[in-house]
Amino acid sequence: MKARVHVMLKDGVLDPQGEAVRHALGAMGFDGVDGVRQGKVIELDLADGTSEARIAEMCERLLANTVIESYRIETL
Image (cartoon, rainbow, N blue to C red):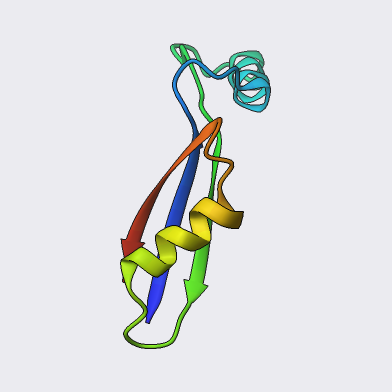
């Protein structure tokens, strides 16, 4: 079984990497980019039958800093 975890900064948390990407895109001539939020995707190979609750526990304890980040679990 595979799961994909999408981790993003919560709304209102400054994203300096996203801002650097937005600035670089503008400098390269890509107009109209008003904002960029950068996150990460973590792909997990899991034993069959691993529950979404167990994956959420992994996120809460290690994969995401839930003070400033939110996550979404996608099972594949």
